[in-house]
Length: 436
Image 1 (cartoon, helix red, strand yellow):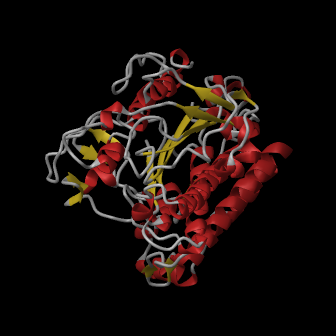
Image 2 (image 1 turned 60 degrees about the vertical axis):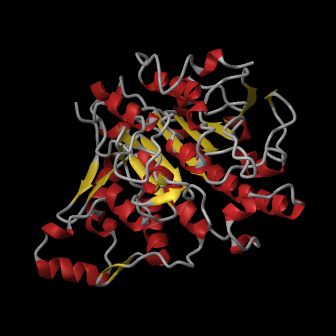
């Protein structure tokens, strides 16, 4: 039985979160929340001095870089000691490309700047394939830094390796959507192309909200729903409206069509809009698997708004300079705060069973290297939030055994989605078997 709810008009079809009170009684008994996997990537590594907690186990301390996670520390674990051997190669430079290319595949990439790409299938795509097309969007790829996939971006490695996390097959990266207005339209599609030209033009000129076309239906649904579901529906539609307005303010749809987000747009606002869009997309089950790149591999972005001018990549080659190390801490604290914002958004979003969306999700955070100064792929900075339907331990500082791999963590995530999965990438065993 199809339990998906939509508000529909000639101009839009808005997917809604599950509202049990509007389902037939027989359908409510076996209504269960889906499990989701979300992956957040940050570039150029994070020095571990102010990242790693001193205490191991539950109730770990929050070092300076993790201070923003205080509201969700009991639902976020720190994993120390994980390595990505697939990114290691002593014969070639290009650690940024290898670390990013294998970030979610845990498979060595081919050294090429041409079209003969070679990688593995990323963990999000393995999970999406296991779901069998249960959602309108099998997966969603978002990024906050544009860039194409052609040419060489790192020591002779293709830009395709440095600007994508998701790989549908060994030769096919799935490009990020870097225009959040386009991403919004992907999650909440509008059908202006199917309207008579004069109607479409009038609607664009008036900047009508996507919700304006379905307001009457929303009211009819609310009248039939329980009090809890009315509150959920109101919260959801309010969040959609708010996000739509925020994206327009960042540089969205103008009267004549889309405008690019201004180069000086508030990066924090973009990151938080992306997080809110992700929370809405998974709540209404448009997709269950999302990747978010806060920057491209080896990013040269300047964080002037944090008081850190200059290239992030160049600063990451700190050579022990205390000034540069302090600047890197400032950048990392901002990055982790954006991860924390996403985790909080999921924690504050009610799922079909009354728990939070975070309770049924896993949110993985890391970088392509450990420290930008030495480009190592061992002991990566890893955070893992959410319960994934009871499959994960939460709120702990976990130390893994020597030689443990990121792929083994991903295997555990996959097994929560599809218990028949026995290997992934270069994995040897699941996370439960690699804890010290």
